Amino acid sequence: MIRVVHYINQFYGGIGGEEKADVKPEIREGVVGPGMALKAALGNEADIVATVICGDSYFNENMEEASAAILEMVKKYNPDLFIAGPAFNAGRYGVACGSICKAVKEKLNIPVITGMYVENPGVDMFKKDLYIVETANAATGMRQAIPAIAKLALKLAKNESIGAPQEEGYIPRGVRKNVFKSERGSKRAVDMLVAKLKGEKFETEYPMPDFDRVAPNPPVLDMKKAKIALVTSGGIVPKGNPDRIESSSASKYGKYDLTGVSDLTAETYETAHGGYDPTYANIDADRVLPVDVLRDLEKEGVIGELHKYYYATVGNGTSVANAKKFAATFAQELVKDGVQAVILTST
Amino acid sequence: MVKEIERVGIPVVHICTVVPISLTVGANRIVSAIAIPHPLGNPALSKEDEKALRRSIVLRALKALETEIHGQTVFEK
Image (cartoon, rainbow over all chains, first blue to last red; front, side, top):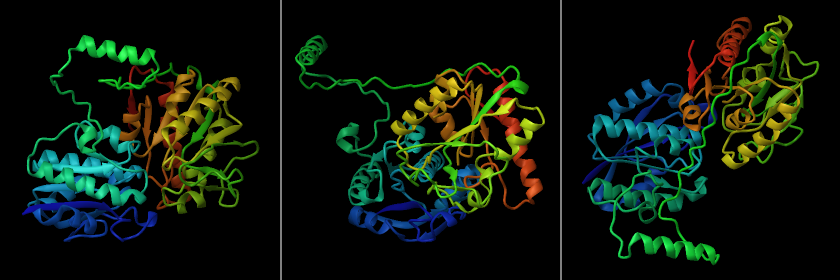
């Protein structure tokens, strides 16, 4: 009987939502929440003996302590297999699942597996180290995710050979495996070129990796004369969210005038972001967008000027493509407005 | 977003709580924040202490903007 320990967050553990994202890890016997479906999918070859539950914010803000505590808890159950999530597009959850899987793999030397949406930050961080089953971007995809995870998990536990990503349903890890093809490379390359010239479909044998790094710009030389702009993904908007920026998967960003504003208050600003406990930001939005401090520094001559506009969007589940588009657009305005440096805050 | 701003030639510093994400995504100047729901705040402190804390993080961010770097750099306290 394959002994399995499952890791989930505070929401799936039934403890609470964002207001409970700071709960410390705990372990319970048997299954909790989605573990029930996972247990059924694993069938009678495996048994989920325990479930770890940890708050997403607690894990991300205390990665070392949380991992250490969880490893101690997991060790006691002597598992043969460790499964985390699935996290879908939940960023902190994905990072937690990836981190704890990696730690369990390294310290307990047992197979590990998780599942998440391809844009989850946990993917780029851990795809090289782990099998991450590709899931939909929301929990509506749970019914497809569970069997896919269970199937690959059992293969890993039984030390069976694992095929290519497309066959097994995991996100490509960047591992290259040499294989023999029946036709030689020159013929395959020419066939591909002919298809391309004819406008027919063809499939590359090796997709070019997208490194997308931008070299750092030179530093600000004279901060006392510099115009600094604020940008945030924390969703800080004027009270009432006049542009109706979505609390998740934002389709837009806002550009707001700070003329005459020296301090963000509960009456004048709020957060539109649905991915973190909004209590603190709603009471004092300076906690996410530090206008008060920058105004002081402006008055004191530490910086030349706080740019009159700030840009805000909501980072919660917002697609990489959209975030890129927003910033590419407003970056042009920042250049036109003579902004010399930007402070970008994220939650 | 950080990379798009860097791409147009403006130095940018990312104040964020989950530094590993910022590193993976490719921000160059990174300053770590206090907590996810209040990156530049701490509701457990008095208003004055909290503002002083916020000011220290912002000053660290400005220092990052004034520092020449050659690759991704996390600016610790």
